[in-house]
Image 1 (tube, rainbow, N blue to C red):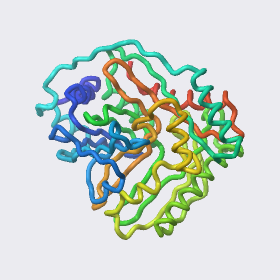
Image 2: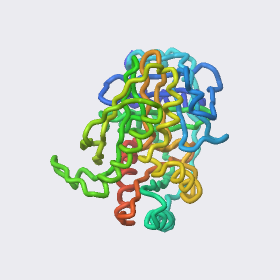
Image 3: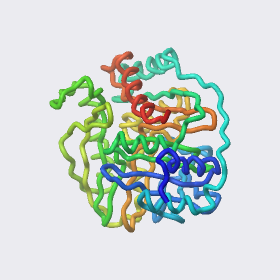
Image 4: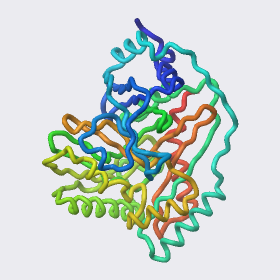
Length: 368
């Protein structure tokens, strides 16, 4: 049975309304979507990345682990690939046999004044020499209208950003998250793994094919490269990495170097994640001190923004991505997240505009 596009992708809104644990995702460069559906009520939760050793499922990890934001593992009780198979299953199943019940209220966006106060704290710490880099982020909230569909917005993201990891996931423990990411945290199979050192941002309308990156953006990415090298060496992992290259993510361009390495015992992937996350790309450097500074001074809880998520299966293939361009979906509003790397040479207006550009990436997928 065929369904009109605006009908079938709304099946996922029904799953959210029933608060069923599931993840819908599409890997970069792929055409097929994948659905991971949990049949039990509660997902597994963990308070340590090492707890992910020998685990399998769709994982959602926060920026900062806490009782309110644990690591969530959606169990792969049902795993389906391809639109036809997925929608045929949902149409016949009992998961989507209820009507949506959504309520709305007004929300306000984060103000420039609030961002400016945070920027001043961060920049002063950098100028004083306490850090090489800090990542300052913010939220932007809009009210939901009656036409909003998480499922249709996921479909829009798939069409708009073919080279990104696209995801829509829900669980009682994590809430509902939708987004797209150009940054691999770890990806691999059969012992062969990759990770990205991604940083630096330019608006694509401002650049040609031959991108000229300024010193600020190059230094920002170099800090991530050096961190990745150091962390892998701590685990006695020999790696190689590519020269920085420009990649496109919607209307933005970034600098990326890809690390490749081999791990004999991939079952200990949680230990590796503990070394790499969070990287200076979303945190700063030195990492521990930057992390503590952000928690104390950023002014809000990032929750799962700038954490990571993806499918974990070390016996077959694992694909985990940094949760960069995303929104948290509530019954009455949508909370969007964006951030950027701050260096001593940074300028307030330039950094604010960068967050605006990044917010537009996710705003542009919201269905109307």
